[in-house]
Length: 128
Image (cartoon, rainbow, N blue to C red; front, side):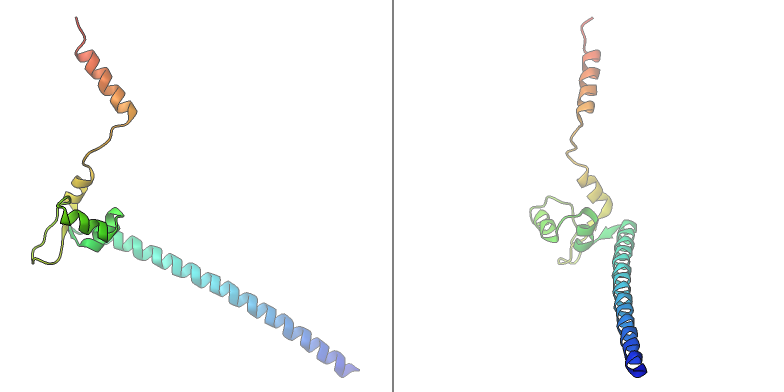
């Protein structure tokens, strides 16, 4: 009978070890996924930082910089809406400062800014 009990104990140990191993594998997989996610975030941050340092950027970099699809950018270029350079007649480049100026066009004023303008106008042009 001792041998049967011994086998039962070994089987329980094997089952426990399998459970521990499966749990460890799941934890490792979750940890690996977390590292991959952080690595992607770091790559994006580094890429964005490099774009911030460049004076001239290409279509893909512009897409990342302003959050617009490349196809939308090509449409803007085709319609001459956005400032661009084509030094070799093929590849598009964009001056980052010109893009910033272009993005700041047609600013909408807040209600408080409009109210302040109206107040300034009325004070300036009131009848004496």
